[in-house]
Amino acid sequence: MTSTSDPRDLRTELESLTTEAFRPELADIDRLPTLDIARLMNGEDATVAGAVAARLPQIAAAIDAVAERMARGGRLVYAGAGTAGRLGILDASECPPTFNTDPSRVVGLIAGGPEAMVTSVEGAEDSRELARADLETLGLTPDDTVVGVSASGRTPYALGAVAHARTRGSLTVGLACNPGSPLGAAADHGIEIVVGPELLTGSTRLKAGTAQKLVLNMLSTITMIRLGKTYGNLMVDVRASNDKLRARSHRIVALATGAEDKEIEQALTATDGEVKNAILTLLADVDGPTAARLLEESDGHLRAALDSRS
Image (tube, rainbow, N blue to C red; front, side, top):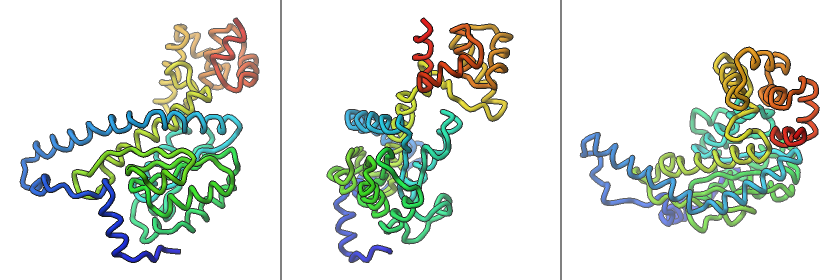
């Protein structure tokens, strides 16, 4: 069902949002030289990291809660409309090649479905019911986390996703770019990155989109670090699905072990290309099956598996 709010009420609401504010000092931006506009944009973008830094305690608390649930087999689900939805899908789609996660473990949902990735689906973002229907297909559990993403913090699709997730006992995170947002208030963990008015009035694919991307990077990456998907800052669960990633796998084993090329190739062959297993065979001087068993006993944490042999 599409929202039937009075357009005048919606206009009033939008006018109150910092992400929608008009900046009269930029009213003649189209008359400026290209380099000056580029400098203005770059200066605006430079403020985003500071806005994220102001919310690091809230981000860290959300990550710890997500990681705890994912360690029990839960999933991380992003839900948003427009740019916010596309960013969620981007982050989710990069987890399998980076961390060797099953595609079902980190999921991105966008209002309007796959078609909305490349074109606007009219009215989709205004539907709470559409979010509920999309999440119903996943069969949410209390171990799952749903992250509603919305620059305004009022998008019905994101709000509907969080509301439905709460009825299923799932953890909820609300990522918005306005203070005191309905989305932040509705979620267990509200994260509001206040980036201020955009260079182009209301174009929240700019600073707001950058802020959302930075936070989503943190949510997935640090969660995977907590789950043992890395060894130090090495991506030891990388999936070697092409020549570049096979070369990267070899380099990761080399950086972790200092072994010679021949030893590395032998280790990767003995472990079917599994980087984490190959490192363990070299550093703990065990065979492939033993490495697999040690990693299973340590829930996939390479450092813990190594400690068990010391």
